[in-house]
Image (cartoon, rainbow, N blue to C red; front, top):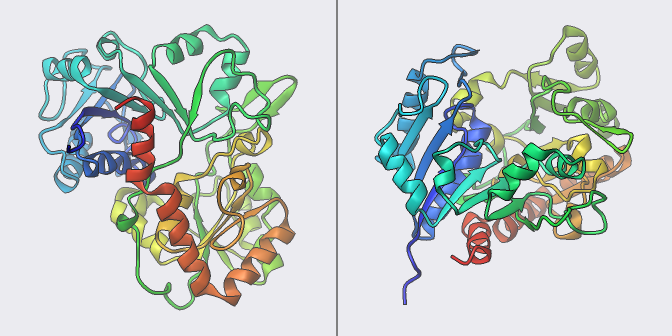
Length: 393
């Protein structure tokens, strides 16, 4: 018998925050579900004012939202199956081919409604579904809020039928935060590897790169049991700022430095830099940037590292899918995969130096290994099929 075709709604924030990293993170779910034969819809139902990455501003206007979601729907085969509901203007209004009545009927009838990154707050319409599925990409914070007894978080999580998390160590002894009866199901970012795969080596002169937002500040820092766990990647990049010097070669950051002093400190340590703004809008250029890199060198957020979450970056998974070796900070993910050929974890500069030496000594081998890791552990159809199996679908 052919597999059952399910109706599945994906809720994310591609219209609200239409930058390349967010777009690709969500598109992998949509495409992966489609490739498994399911009937997939994209709904964005939010009271948050969207960001226009061309004008660099928040705006209540929905012209850019309609443009980018319409373009993505045509390119990724969900044309006629999407809506953006700007609740900051009206509960009833929708942008796109589906009206409010059709959206609500989808909530009632869908076999699953994926709340990607917990991006959708609960509202009376979304709660028409009793099949909400929470997908957490940033582990640690919600578990701490539950441990601190924050009623809003507890109620939000309880309204979901299942809770998935990129923190694959949550619930294990490595992760210190009590779960208070919540069941967290391990998962990881699905990646459609053929969106990223490239044949052959990177161009001459390619370097290890990273795409990072260093301007997030401390708005999502959280205190737990007398310690502060940091959200921004900047403190971790600062710890390893001298890594290019120690490795004897340039690295590159696609980022906007907050100050000229910060930029000078990194530039003085053999970091090249460029603004990520253009590739954030031109999402195909974002793919090409990854493909034309020698590999990725990046850090993880303090929250992920010190809580031993087992988190792994969705962007790093894309580098691997492009056959680009990755050197990334250990969070406990090596309990499952990586840590050697194609994917290296580090805790100190010595680990970084060793990884760079090994990759440089046999780049082709590590390139092949990187892709094989992506195909075995992150292929969208494999990851999403596992999620659906555990949902009973």
